[in-house]
Amino acid sequence: MRLGLNFPHGTGHGIGNYSMVHEPAQGFASSMTTCRGWTAHESNQFTTIEPGCYKKDTYGIRTENVVVSRVVKENEFGTFLGFYPITLCPIDTQLIDKSLMVQHEIDWLNNYHRIVYKQLAPNLNNEEQEWLAEQCKEI
View (cartoon, one colour):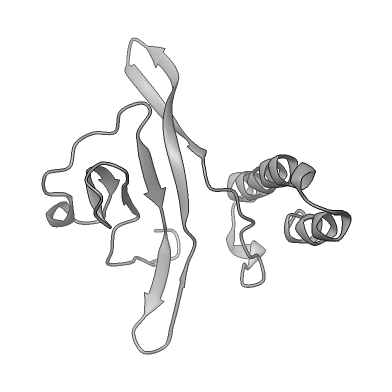
């Protein structure tokens, strides 16, 4: 919103419920027509998060991940969920313009890459670890 950009598709959808590509019962969409039959998120649901930006006949870019929802806080205002990554893969930062990001976005990306490296590196040989370290370096 800060930059006046929007995308005409959902940001994510449920998985593992009906063996369909875009599954209910939960998801993220910019239009309520896309959400027909969808429900509120609950703890322990698997969801894709796949924001993208497309300009017709010009370009398109999308980052996709699968997350699981978990309760992070409960208080008098309700139950609050957080999303924890299931698929761990570095996000390609070559096309990221850091000057367009606010600090919490930079922190999120750098923290995500720390998690990716910590979880994957022990299963890789030295050459693969070096490659992964380069992909996961801070921006």
